[in-house]
Image (tube, rainbow, N blue to C red; front, side):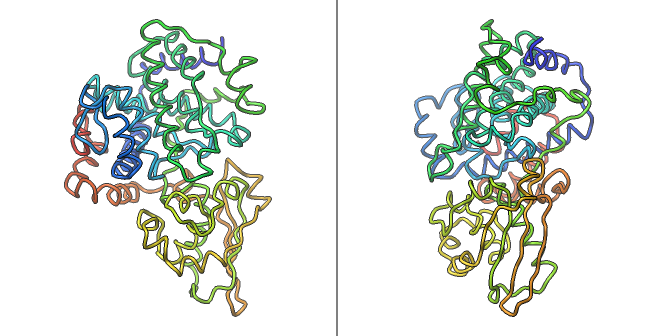
Length: 447
């Protein structure tokens, strides 16, 4: 039996699984957080340009598109919403796989569920399955995969396909075909977010569309390559160095990775988070006058230095991938959410000056523990010689220091209320967190 055949059996067997209450709640948290990220990205310039590009495909079908009241067919909705939900950089993370599962997985299966008018409960179960398959794959191909590839675009196809296969009640062979076909279209290069372009958010959008399309053609009888993951010229051989396939199915069906998801507390690249959290801790614990700081030394892991390398950013994109800017913004503004990336913040002279006092280096301990632990060491030296240090061993929002339901709801409200109003935001949150109803009811608040 190949790896994807075993996943196919898992997907089929999951239809007879009673998911734990806590795991279903975790799926509701993921669905709420995805909606926050989706709505936050819906009024951006990139979203408007994307909807314009898809203008001829809007006005048909049953599926909602964020930022407009026009509908679309499921494939277009998966691509557009999958892209829009990644624009604002607020979507969730599976830490162990350097992977954002929500955008590709939920965008695809939400579109399919809306097309079919499925219930929220059916959607939640499909999300659990999609997260399980994709996060497991993401974990065993790291860290080498992340050197060149954007995991959310590559592994995202498997999350989308698995969730959709579950929702369509495909049998094991069909589910395997869906995963195999999706996998051969996996793509997304790191270079796409090492410049200020609009390409990166399209990676999960493409993955969502690919996964949904692969599932629909598998349902129609199109076959895939069963050994696509482990084959000599397959996914693992091409996209990483030494995948640990022997770990792929450990505790499968007895633990659920959706219970181990990181929810972002800051609106930027997650590699910045440990340093931001370390600074926040020091500001809380000590009477630090930011105007009297001599130097801030940040020790981090290699991905932080390579991906978050911008200094004195001039655009929101660059700022979100700038360690110096986000750390300085936390110290001056008090938080790193949407306001930190507005023009007033980007031109803030206090932030600019503080950036020049930040020194970033690679710390061997932090580097050795990546990607399982995202950590940073921060040392703040004052002009009078006083030194404050903190080792942030995880990020606030990671599984070992999770956001509370209230913190997650506060984040959701901050992102959605300016765009859909407080009343609609409250209704949507209550529907997602507590109700059982058709999926189409949810989109009435944002489309």
